[in-house]
Length: 83
Image 1 (cartoon, rainbow, N blue to C red):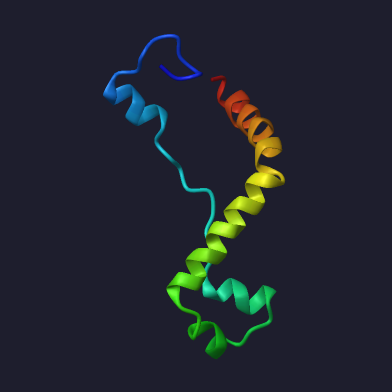
Image 2 (cartoon, rainbow, N blue to C red):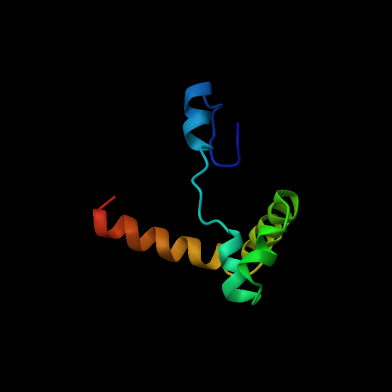
């Protein structure tokens, strides 16, 4: 059982219920614009550092606006579709 269901989910239901949908990403080109690095400098950044930047960005978004924005946007989209 989950806090959302009063009965255990079948494996198929659980897979669908917890299926993640990507929200955003970060790439080296974003650093050229925001951190004012050159393209040459950003190409020297290793994938591990980029992954850490992405993880910290995800944490920052979840700590700030994510939980506020999610119900507003979901209700808007679902309301448009009559869901």
